[in-house]
Length: 377
Ligand SMILES: NC(=O)c1ccc[n+]([C@@H]2O[C@H](COP(=O)([O-])OP(=O)(O)OC[C@H]3O[C@@H](n4cnc5c(N)ncnc54)[C@H](O)[C@@H]3O)[C@@H](O)[C@H]2O)c1
View: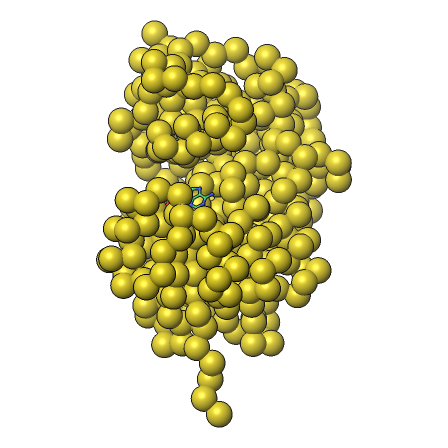
């Protein structure tokens, strides 16, 4: 019997949607049948580039009319839960949703719960779990090549939720997905900074303790340079990722870790749909990283060590709560380090009036640090 072909819909047709389209173009059993975006220009450009036949400006209409098998959720972060839940309710067979899961917590928990209760495989696109060097590093750590892992560090720019989510998530992957115990965090938000419409700190430093005693320190936007690196320190060696790739330092000469590429996020999602093991990107796995980040914000809010996960009743991001409680006074206008459209959309959704003079865009300044510096002066 011929294996089925999956009819795919892509919701949100900006930058990352092209990456998803690449997965579907390469996979022999997927075909993109429709796409949706609230911005007709972005929609038209994407559909022409990827030969997508059906276009919608309302994703709910797409779900109803096209009844896709697979959906990629590539919209701005705050909308991932509502789009994912609508796709699940429309009866799709599998969902690949972008990271971070949401701007908040309650809705991220709900998107996982709704998909689980309907038996719909939900994968969150933390694709670094599939990077060959990282996969090899995980094997070496499990084989004891650096002894007992004690501590790690991840440094990046562009916002804690936006890029920190990769660091938290893949660090868990490196260590065999240990459960978190507590977090201790400090952050600064003196400028009215947003990232694709999501409230974001100017800089943050968070220590995360796992059940196995391992401590991960995450630094986001502490430096202006958009360099990203990670380290895992063990009793008998270290593994580093930075310029030069992933390198193992244990007994003897440093060893660059290269490996064959294996399956990707789409391969594992389809295998899962067809009764195979769940994807390493399963929604409940990604949710642990989201819980850690939300608990980190709560730690900064309460100025204390906070256990992970937060109480079941916590809905809103504690960063928003801090902002709304006036604990983070800012100077200067709201600005977005990635997308002015996303900022406008977010303010509209929150019912906050925003006029031309009140916001600035990051003007291609990806880290926003330069702009933050100007506003601070
Ligand atoms: N996995 C990764 O490494 C990675 C990399 C880049 C972006 N992302 C994530 O992907 C998401 C999108 O980022 P991007 O860079 O593609 O942004 P983008 O601004 O380029 O594109 C997002 C698109 O979604 C559309 N959109 C927003 N709300 C919508 C709605 N309700 N219905 C239909 N369309 C809607 C926008 O009009 C826009 O065209 C973000 O959450 C981001 O964090 C992940």
